Length: 301
Image (spheres, rainbow, N blue to C red):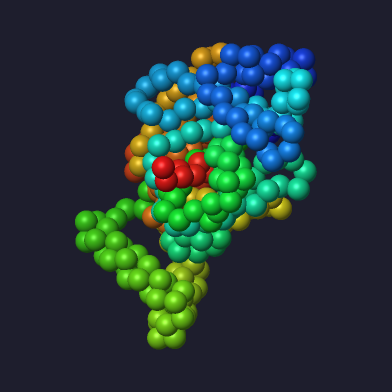
């Protein structure tokens, strides 16, 4: 049973027969279907079914289950794997993305080097069919793609925000803008930019070392984005809530919080089962928890 099925409202799904029936319904009744040849005598297929029902607020994002497999020469479908997903509409990054296939199955991981994060962002690719089509057509690498990031979580906590004045917000934006310019220059080999970044990091470390003795770490760190555990697409985050709505799984009737988060200037949607969230989410508050990062690559037409 997939660990993150509870994130989209299937927390009580524990029986293997019930799961098999659900996956069969997704294949037979799924509204989003995509196919492509994998270069052999088989046809790759992905079937998706939406389970979103809005309770409070408004959203264009949707939760669902994707079932992937292949058809043989006799048009017989063989199930390979499935995964729960959250499909968003917010463009998270316009940086170029590289994709690698997982070893065990026809699924893919994406890598995005966005300077705002500070680490190479690895995510589980939702729309693998368009990528396989582009790969088989020999048109990779494709430039000018955009990336929609989403995340699922099984445990989270709501934290109060750090009090910031209007001047603080303006100053923080200016500091972030200047740092991004230095990072861009450093990536191109500018030695002066590299030296400036090193000095800034040393000053920050010194300031935090003094304040941490008297203040709580979460009053110093507004947002953070760090790899978590041994799986490369899992992260531990602290992020500001930009939007929040309550949706329901229309099959199980379990309620799910859907939040748009801003973390290190990176914006993405996250969903978590209402039963797994400690606290009441609201715009301006912060979400702290571990997430499974997914991504949808928009290939240029």
